[in-house]
Image 1: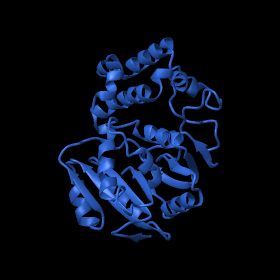
Image 2: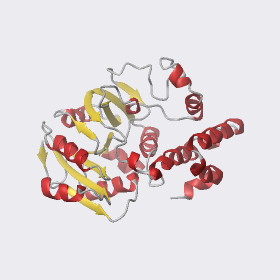
Image 3: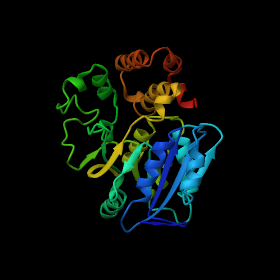
Image 4: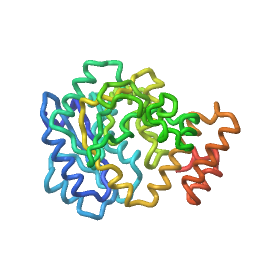
Length: 305
């Protein structure tokens, strides 16, 4: 692996918020990657107060760094990073990677991911097998789109009761063998490798999503444009999960607001009224009082930021 100042095989954007120690470890593993590919890395810091910025400047001077004076959210920050790394330049990186600071890649993960994309031109999005600190699979690393039907089954708890069911287990595809490559609807933004030509066709992340849902939306737009989305368990990555978001009350609200945005953007028009109101009720109950103004906003939520 070579750090390159110009157009590269892989552009990696890491959005950070107050997780200095995890960010350090993430960068260490990225920089220790082996293989025949070129790389640029951009850390976008969303106004951390824990010394993250100083640490990156001191320990990783080869990394591009964007210092935001506020927290504009995950989608906007990632887009800032990809613009910095030249996604819209005349000679852009061939692939772009969303990578969370609470991840650790294995030495060959990035090279193997690039090689897989090179060998499969019809794949627009690629995700790895994410392993939690306790050794279990992070179920979010391979998902179906949360259609009204699938979301309804999840809200009723049927996905947990019948994880091996091909009907009720579709939310996290729990009926699939976690050690087999599979075409899926979406992978998770903690590690989401995207073909740049797909980005140039469908655009960057939708900044209506402040946090959560942006990866599902991106995967849906890319899949709708004709590319495949693939889960590849031969690519291993550790994931602490929600290290940044658990510090933020706003992030908890945004989880449910993202559900509403995704639903209105992709499914409302085809959803019967009875199911629509069940979905609104379920999101309202799960999200609690902070989410009710967004539930009441209805389709106008698509204009809110």
